[in-house]
Length: 371
Image 1 (cartoon, rainbow, N blue to C red):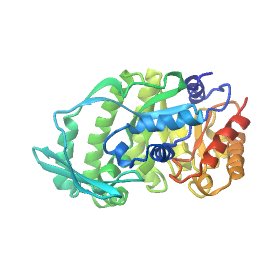
Image 2 (image 1 turned 180 degrees about the vertical axis):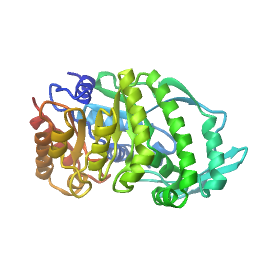
Image 3 (image 1 turned 90 degrees about the vertical axis):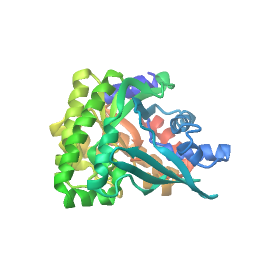
């Protein structure tokens, strides 16, 4: 089987020729790239030279993985472009201000781009909801989507191309930060309900255009929709309606739906199993970083859900190659039977994860993942 065939077969909850191996290694890839070319990370994150996706794919090719190519979107057009200005540059980081003009006033954000880490926000788009939300709402309405996947597929049969949508807490975190997101849900419930309704309609229309683009799968991003951060009641109110409708649309169109919820996700697996048409759930983090017993959820939910994960990122960072091998073997024993399992990392491993452990994960996956 090709990598693409292998992933699709597992995602359809069937048995491929072997367990697919598709780790999330963006930070590992960035470290390898920087060590090779001797350039700061902002060359990628700020200047898109090369694009992050190219760095990620190169790392996957180096390991010989079945490439889970999720760094795609669909083509969009907008008459509004933010003005970008470097306001500070040192040896360690570049600080950039972005200003967008709207009929309701300016939107401003400031982002730091470190030389050896991903970017992080110093100032987010929305400071005051009442004042700034109308600006962002207007800006979002200017966007026009086209059913064309960008960038174009460059991996062919090596893996599977996905495009994505964000769950509401992830969208709101991106413009408010995770702590403020939680405060907003409790301090401003009325306006958050109004914003959610707008976002729900926005993301469903986006999904419909993405489906027309015919991706390999649609990826539902839920990093900030984890039970490590939100409550089941917030998930039911602000996440489930989106997952339910997106997965229904995907099922109707014959496209795989694939959701990510890092941290504690055991309850989310159950909620999605009972209430949605979801195909794939990841990264199913276990003890120390999450609350998933892979063997238990395989028995309870594996009749319909493909499970993707769950090699512990702390073990990858701090353990020995033998520890990693033992973790891989256990994951495959717990969830690999009869297919419907993709061996992956329990979220993205840290930048300084030893190369020996990354290679051991791939080697062990091939050793124990044979059917």
